[in-house]
Image 1 (cartoon, rainbow, N blue to C red):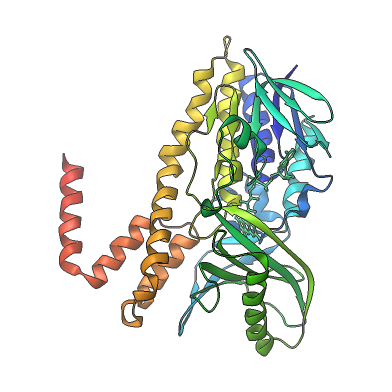
Image 2 (image 1 turned 90 degrees about the vertical axis):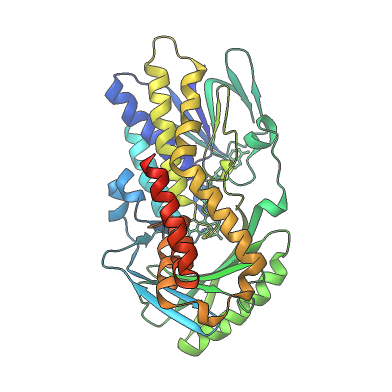
Length: 396
Ligand SMILES: Cc1cc2nc3c(=O)[nH]c(=O)nc-3n(C[C@H](O)[C@H](O)[C@H](O)COP(=O)(O)OP(=O)(O)OC[C@H]3O[C@@H](n4cnc5c(N)ncnc54)[C@H](O)[C@@H]3O)c2cc1C
């Protein structure tokens, strides 16, 4: 029997394994880990590849991987076209293959087994172990479901299937361009770009990734393709030559996070646990943060003389207090903007509000900061009152 099986060799599963081994080493234990993935090339999954800066605090070497360092973002909304530059890079656009190979190299050195081409068809919790069933049955003391947006672990063990209203559908093309690319990630908002979401243009080392995302219950791939064609037309005006070299679409969880994410000896992490920003659709940095946390909790579990399931629940508690609440607030903001966004007049959207929105988008500020900024501009009396209440609250 293995100590841990991780289902899924994406950022969440690989970060979990690396963090577990590094923490276990410190604790003087060496759990036996197996990672399985249904794909022989798990790096083929579609992704924009924007990795936000706070990821580099967890695994600093990721910042040195080949990619395009991003120092600014462009926000286009109605007639507003704002470029916000940051004094330090906000992150890096890195290909999924480069990122996954970085993890594979380190995990291989640590002796972790990886089996690609293993499709998990079922997961079952027994009294003292967990079984996964694919081309053969494998047993483990603990199973981590890092199996992405359509997670089978989530569907079978946590009984949460795919409700389209909790997901976004993203359609993306890779284009080759003969122009030199600016180190800026672009975000396009408004009905002309996406019916219920946004469009993006991210530069990579030798191509651009241009995509559209929208709530999955409102669109399908063909309708998104029409929006993307319009954006490409706009881009063609600026670029000498544009050639599409790849296109794909995929689901992105946008519910703001699931509860529970721990069930006995089974833990969910990354897209499987809906750990994605509802505002930006970005999930790599969160998958890596959550994986790092799961790895630490599992190392504690295996270092304990009598490993108890209540050690595992720590992951859920810490996740919720550090990130869960913030993601749920983002979801409330997104729902609000989808309902009332069109009522915001141009006069209400000022430069410093756009900057605050950008700060939230790139993970440097949270939603509360943006809402307070908006109130300060639109309703100073209410803003002062709320500030007063929150300072009274703090003094108690
Ligand atoms: C078009 C698009 C663009 C995006 N752009 C960005 C971006 O720019 N920045 C960002 O931060 N996020 C972006 N995201 C989101 C990001 O890709 C995900 O949040 C991130 O990949 C989540 O990592 P994960 O490891 O949880 O899941 P995944 O990366 O989906 O990995 C899950 C793995 O599990 C495997 N698997 C699934 N089911 C099984 C099974 N039954 N048996 C065995 N293996 C299985 C899969 O093959 C896969 O390799 C984008 C998503 C899409 C769709």
